[in-house]
Image 1 (cartoon, rainbow, N blue to C red):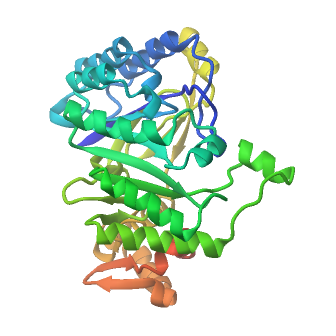
Image 2: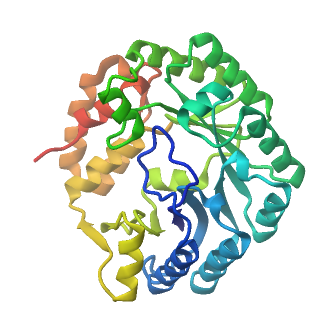
Length: 374
């Protein structure tokens, strides 16, 4: 089994915090979609005829696409790949784009999972983020999607901005859970390079909040999610029973996937491929039959470290028998020696080593401690 990720590199506005590849100029959108479909055709053998069980429209903002463009991409996939019956098809959408007719057309086209970029229910905070929607539009978007018949809806929320206190974060979460969605992805606001937020902080126009407050907000998130029947199956992802993101779970489990579009990544068990982060260069490369990607052949050490980084974030954690089978006894012994140093941050369940709630605060640092560095 494998999946396909489609990167739609367009947004109507640039968010304060975002470092993903996108353009706010939509004039060449049709040309880019045409090129993206050419990439799909040319790379139809990348996954070696493995069945496609997940398709994910990410970005950027996929809801900048019109339905002709969505259908063009899906038709290309179904023409050139072996797609399982009833695949999970996720579509990221912004609330301002969630018109009733558009939602109905998405559902008719086969989209069965929506990922809605709400980020906040505070209008002042949304304006500060430079989002194009209001809190009222967020709630209306979810209700319209449910009326259309979507039964697998995920929402995104950000915590850690200057607008948040433990009290209003609690209110945000209560609002989110009251919408009866099936999935929540929630991320700590981080200062990424070359973003508006980093620029403002450098100019001393903004300040970051304390790590202590961010940690408190994360604890509240975990507590409230559990109280409302949401299972934390990955550090930033929570779901009601049977509603894990199949596509993202496959990433964390090391399954193969094909990523198409500017800045998209692909993995086939042997190497990783990174497409160029430029719409113009991407399209021009196909016109001139030139290379549009970089490729990294993975060593055993690379694969082991990626295993640690991804698996440790999940509820299943790292499996010592799996490590021994995939990488050999040397790496198994190394892992067992290093994991013992993590103390209260790790709990053991048979052959699985998982993060405790305390450990989830330090996941990246713990993973780094466990990396094998020759």
